[in-house]
Image (cartoon, rainbow, N blue to C red; front, side, top):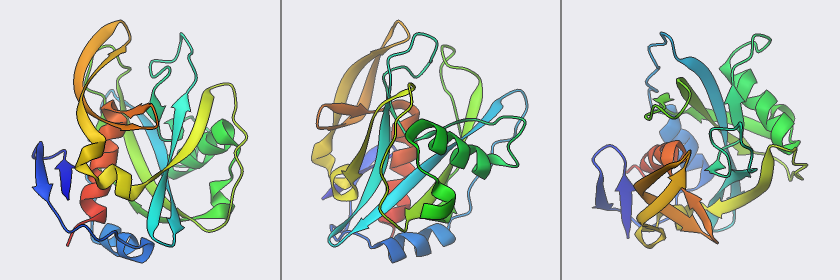
Length: 209
């Protein structure tokens, strides 16, 4: 099986065995996340929620509702949003936004098992923000209560994300622009952009020897 790596922009032949949640936790513990230098960019945070299954680990995504004032309108994303003055830190931002968007209290239902590198928006059509991704392991079953900003919440097996056959060159339209991107398609949903960049780093770490 092959894995797309965002850092080298290539496909790498990798071990096909799916990592367990404990293995992912251990590999995240060895990762030193790169912080954003700050400056004028506004901080945001997302929650990457993992759910262990007998033969796989699943990853939680949301599909944002179609909303004219949302720069990520209609896109697949991780739950999260921008830091607000009342947030203690960016982890609290991710927890608060997840609770507001999908009605899940990650503070009681998950364990924080790691962090990925901060990433910055790349196009002038996006707000000047950087995103801090937190990885959390689900410890109990949860039910979603979606607010008006979210059209859907769904799980994707990590084996699907890891499979090169799931990824292909794709043309997408957003914010009045057309982008030719490499994206993952899962049941008609397209994972691309900042979400693809975060997902790619998660996979690189999760499947690291």
